[in-house]
Image 1 (cartoon, rainbow, N blue to C red):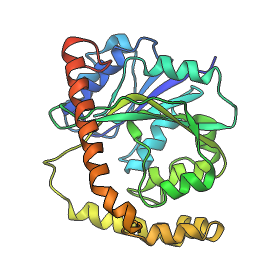
Image 2 (cartoon, one colour):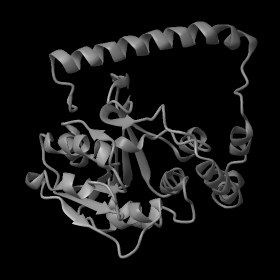
Image 3 (cartoon, rainbow, N blue to C red):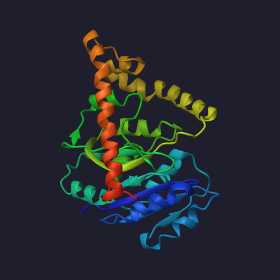
Image 4 (tube, one colour):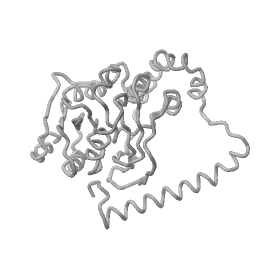
Amino acid sequence: MASIAIAIPNLNGANYLHETLISLRNQIDKPDEIIFSDNYSDDESLEIVKLFPDLNIRVIQPDRFLGMSENWNYVADQTKSDWFFLLSNDDLLRDTAVKKLRKMLSELAPNIGVVSFKSEIIDENSRLVLGKYRFGKPKLREEFEFLKQNIKFLHINAASVAIKKDSWIDVGKFPQEYTVLHDLVFYQRTVMKWGILESKEVLGRYRIYHNRPKSEIRLNLVMEDFRTYEKSDLKFHTEKYPDLNVIYNSEVEHRSDTLNSLAEPINLLRNVVLSIMTTCRRLQAVFDSSGFPN
């Protein structure tokens, strides 16, 4: 049976870390290990971890301050399991996450390197912003199809992605030449050598911040990453699949007049359905168990 780790890279995550660890305490099936890499936090992160002795969290610390991708690699490197969830210090896993992954792994083809689940969206107050019910069978995307969808922006939600450690090592881990785009590039490199299975099941909650001020420093880092990306990974992909260059440079999807006339009512219907889903998920959290900390 494949072993499963939870790897948590942390830097000053005290605001939401307690809720994240509650979601791990609630797991129906326990992970084989939980590794917590503290990147020289100056808040109460380590004190919060001490409140969960039952989780047997192994706390590690690098010998110097690390960049984001470096800390991701550092904590994943310390895992001994076959697979790991890379869990942000402010995101949540559903109580069935480990159980569901373990069941899937028992039936999984050996060439699958990543299993991506769906996530709901919560805000700074842990209020559900976008609830989801997803149905259907897992889908294994072809290389071109995956790159087409993820050539510029990542549509895999990091809150609920399981990574096979062998595949992570095989593709060179999270690329440290990128400051912000390392996850986008990692999955692109992975799909060139391994299968990425996309499940419809909701196993995570991803936190967004409406009131976080925009950082000019971060914007500059993003722009620098894209310059690196265009000269290396994107160049490699577009040489293999020239059509990707058009998709990457297209800001607005071109539609026929018929599709344009249908776009507004379709979007309206979609928003109504999403609103109903979210309301139902909020009610479920009140009257039943949503599988996430309330």
